Length: 362
Image 1 (cartoon, rainbow, N blue to C red):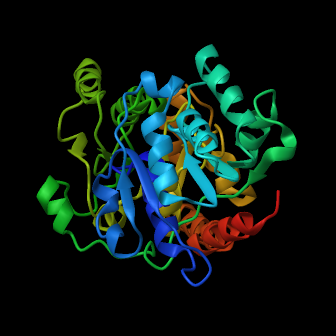
Image 2 (cartoon, one colour):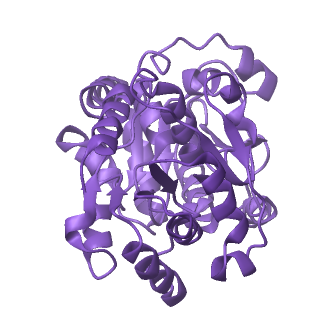
């Protein structure tokens, strides 16, 4: 069960999980509590897909429509994801579902609001297993929110064959006006305050204004969301133009974007396990990301030097400068990033881990 499959790492992961489950052992149906969205394209061909629109406030107290939809499906397990936990857990119990599982993806502000913690605790009481997508998130969930005995860790995964290194064919560069050989720093995600793209723009302004560049780098922030106007305003404040920073909106096919990327970056205040980061690393791209949530665990020991403290725009600019100035070291780290995802964060490993969890006895 998910809010929607509009666009984002969580949504891609849920769609991949539905597609990847072994149909000889499991019957899977998807229930979205808003609408299906872009990531659901073609999903109906592999699994039944349902939507159930409910009034947001009333259904928190009495999720009758959701419970009715669950009874109609008659599942043995309800598996919910971030954004619908409280409603899903309550509706599942009203529908008499014998087992309730929830995956927390770390979509929250730090520190949590009291309201969020209140609903998390209520939801946890109705949930048999709570899956965290990283060890730091598991520790957070077990710290007064969830009975530690209920917590499991299943790391997010991506298809390493699909997200493999590819050469830049130059088409996207030409379309966006980025000259051949110009280094590109890329980030992909929804325009949400927790991503702190305002800090990324500040860091990039410091980078381009304090460096002597034979070809000044470009910054690509791919995504969409309510903060786009604020980001454009921030660009103007720090003196960056549309030539410096590209805001192409939602990019349907990220492979050409990853192919032209020199460094992949996250400036987030909080992350569970970023699917965009995993995809970039799988594609053989050197990462520079804030040391929050599961980012450090994703990078592993070999890439700890590519972490920067959250909130320090100058530290991020310096880390970019180091990466761009040393192509040999950057390429070594790009190879290490690819191997890290192949070894620990493959899509197949994630899907098989969920299958084992579904077969557990309470």
